[in-house]
Length: 323
Image 1: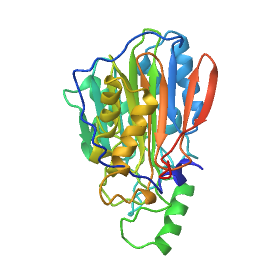
Image 2: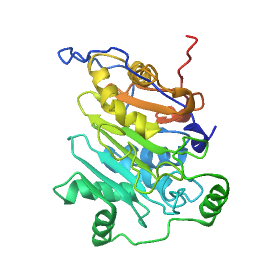
Image 3: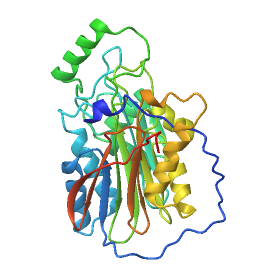
Image 4: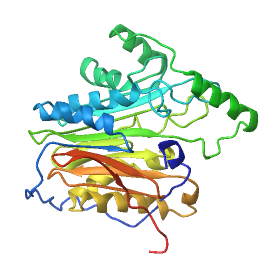
């Protein structure tokens, strides 16, 4: 199952978990060798680029930015950067955020005509007093920083949009045309964690819609003492549960990355009236020890991991109401 197909199903709700912030997180070192990079979906070229930087003693933040840029420049990938599927009016708009091991973060929302949203988000973090810039303001800032405007709507994505208009009504139904995010987490040889998200958002969304991907705490969260998490899938459900922050706080309590992702998914699924059968959400996470994990609502989600053992795509465990 590819990324575009993935989102059509998922959910989780209120599993009564009271966060105990007085619990201490175990920092006992294991046998995992750094560095490590993980990402949502099967994106081996992106993790390879990040790994090349990490292997040269590069900074985890640089690895995240350069890894995400690979997918943003991939015209065949219709969920990130150039070639992304447009909104209902035919406009490609991008969302992205980035967060470093010092707790700094930057974000752009509803960015048009600029391919590398992840790099603009980093400059928002480093060159402005703000965390988030939106719309025309984000584009104006990007141009002032030397980014060139370009048409992000490729012939293939435009043709798909025209085909969609013939059969779909103007109604925000979660359906098979939905697509999602590339999220990436990395630990460098100095044991510093950074992360990033970049996306063109929900396919054929209402103009102006923003999902979880550019929102710190929802689409991405990093705590260098504990670990990091990123989300993918239906952003509205992630926002409602502040998903990535929840995953990191669960790891602070001592949960493994996989256990934390699973519990965050259950938080969505178990909400009263949840229609999780009709959408997808998935999380990946990494802790300070270098342990990694993932979990999703629906079958089909995967995580790419690059460490000393190689570049591998790993199928995620998923919610099964029978268990």
